[in-house]
Length: 118
Image (cartoon, rainbow, N blue to C red; front, side):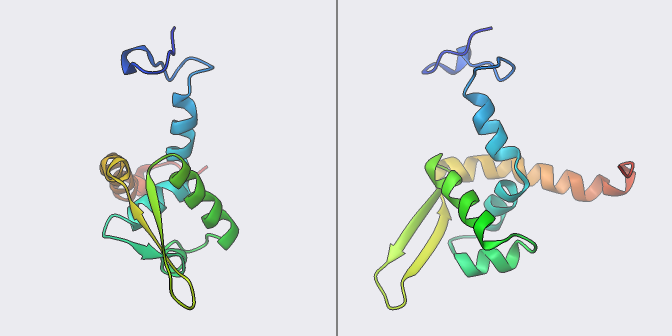
């Protein structure tokens, strides 16, 4: 099992030290998946995202958006205005991962009644 960086043929998500696991951890997080989905229709301000992602605290949403931005999935644009105007949008990488995440969200909604309660 190898997990060299630079050539995707050598990445192995099952290898303990592979950085793929960090990306998988980020994308498998419910708030990340939901934030990416909320941004599919275009840029949004923090407050709009928080209203759409019912139940997320401001702290958790801030942390989630920062992680997504640091990983290259989300852009944060600051507009010089009073008060400050900040918008979040998907990058090309974010739009690419939005497709399988949308499929997963749809699958969950369609099959929720079949899943045994924990």
